Image (spheres, rainbow, N blue to C red):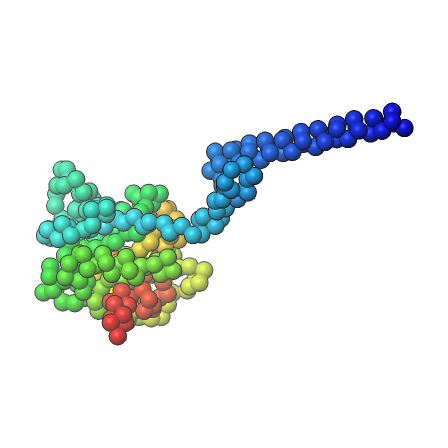
Length: 304
């Protein structure tokens, strides 16, 4: 019996030794697993018995709890306007200026791009140029403006020509406040216009020409009535721009830029007037611009 008991004791020692080896291997496997996952950028929650517990949020939770920092680009279509107001643009904003009226052999500043001189001062050439050129390198927010978009620079033209802002500091603050993840487009103009679609004697035909690019699954047919804010001052999030393909914007640019080469057909100004009334639909808004996309309305509502 002692002999048998000795075997049992030895067997017990072997089992305990085997159990210890299993525990060590398991611990090593956990450590290796943690290292592999952390080296690959994945972090999981592991409660370690070696020292202090190692606790980090899982990747999905980290992403949902992290607020991304927006990046900004100001796109200006310039004719001969005074740009001294650019001193108020935040230092971390990128500035791109499309020169429309000067016969330039080279850009007049480090921010300038000479484009489509033969089309005069139509802003949609510069806007479409920018979208096509930077489609895959957009900042999270783009603000599109004329060179005289601030009220003091174009007040004499009437409220349809400018934004309600006296300084770009005020404009930037309003945009960063009201252009949210859930509201990815806002128009910056003052007046609001209701208009029938495709019937105007000047730009109605251009609206019909552009409709195939503007239509969507939600709005497959041309609207009867649209509401918009004139002068095409607007702020757009990257996601709204990329609702359409780069090829769509490029095709629209070609329509705008070369349509006047067709005898007795449209000119660039007619096409840009049509686009002025359509940007909001292009970026995902309904034909009648929503009040959430009307920045001046939002500012006034906040004061009530």
